[in-house]
Each structure stands twice: as structure tokens, then as C-alpha cells.
Amino acid sequence: MPFPLNSNANFDIDDIKSPSDAVGGRKPKNNGEEHPAMPPKKNPAPPDKGSAPEDRQKIRAILPRLDELYPEAHCSLDFRNSLQLLVSTILSAQCTDARVNQVTPSLFRKYSDARAFAEASLDELEEAIRSTGFFRNKARSIQACCRILHERFGGEVPASLEALVQLPGIGRKTANVILGNSFGIPGIVVDTHVGRVTQRLGLTKHKDPEKIEFDLMALVPKDRWVKFCHQIILHGRQICQARKPRCEICPLRPHCDYGQQQA
Image (cartoon, rainbow, N blue to C red; front, side, top):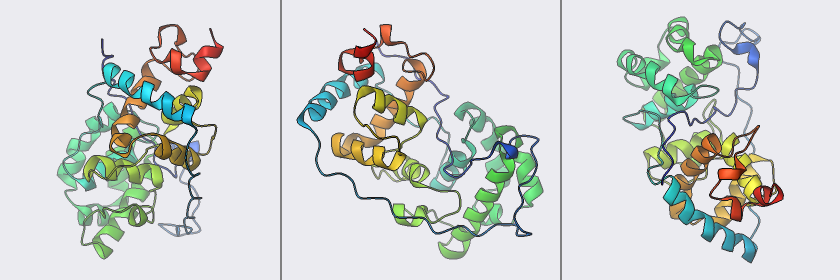
């Protein structure tokens, strides 16, 4: 029987790091600038070529089981266009999708396009998203993003990884969320669940998200990238949990390096 979908699967904004900006936290110093300059983003290392035959055999066994367990896996953020998904994905950092979905209806009624976000009062925007946590960092990222979208892209979200990762607060993970779920452009999203579960399964030996992304790109068929990540996130929340994985009931255990060690 399929496992029920968990609406709390969420993706983190790539650049939120400090808990000092959580709800009730203090504003970080920025040398008097409202929006500190974003450092240039480094190009990732190229992926390793090929994959071992045993890894390809393993992924061929895992994919059908994931389809049986999570046939309806999909993005659980509510959105109607790519801008709404971009904003919702930023808000989902360290916050459940369920909470984000409670905040965004009124937010999107008040700010209907990139220009509205760009010209919003920062204090009012912070207050509108306060309950999602890290609201000051998130508000600045949303506003800085939307200013660039309004000024350089005619208010539209670009449909390319290269353009997206140059936006404030947007890294490869968030960019792949937007591309895969709004534009239908396949990408591997490596959040904490995808990283943890694929390491335990033995699909990657790396800890760096970009290296994990490239390992999975080499193994998983391209037309499965988006759904595979949604399925792995659900599995990480429901079965392969961080502190106490439920190996004894895990249907993927026969194909899992970590699970076999627990036998």
C-alpha cells in the first residue's frame, strides 16, 4: 500500500544560515546597506563520469518501489505561477510547507507581482511573513530578487538555472525546485532529506550537495529527476528519519547499504 503523502516536505532557501534572524531575532549588521551586495556564485565542479554497474542495478530496483510507495508525490507548496513558487520556496526555509501555505494566500493578494514585492515596505513585508521564521532574511531576499526580476526580466522569473542562481537567496537547490515544478525542466533537488536518504541507500558517498546532485543525475533517468526527489523527501520524513530511521519497516531495506548494516 502506498504511504500517505506528507504535506510538510519543504525545501530550504540556500543562503539562510544564522539562527539570529529567526522569529524575534535581531537584524544582522549590513554596513548600512539595505541589501548587502551578493558575492559572485562559484560554478560547480563537473559531475563524475559514469556510474558503477551495481549502482545502476540498485537504482533500477529502487525506482519501482518508490512508485509503489509514493505514486502521487508532488510539490506540496501552493502556487499559481513561477513567481509565487519562488517566493513560497524562499519562505519554506526552516518552515513547513503547511505553514507557508497558510501565509501565502493573503501575501499574494497584497503583492501580486514582482514590482509589488520590490516596492513594498520592508517592515510590512517582514510582518506579513513573520510566522515562517527567519523573516528578516527572507523578506530581504524576496525583495532583492523581485527588484532584479522587475528591472532586468520584465517581472518574469527566468527559466534557466544560470540566471536563477544569480538572484539573491537563490542557489542550485531552490533554482531546481522552480525549474522542475513551474517550468517542467528536470533537475535534482538536494535538501537534507535527499542528501541523508541517498547516502544511506548507497547512491552517493558525498556530503556536499552539489556532488550529491551530480551523482544522482548520473544514476536516475532524467525524466524521473523531479518526482524522484519528491519521493525521497517523503521517504525521509516518514521512514528514513534523521535520528531514528525505521529500518525494520522500510520497503527499501533490501537495497539499502545502511539498512543492511542494521540487520
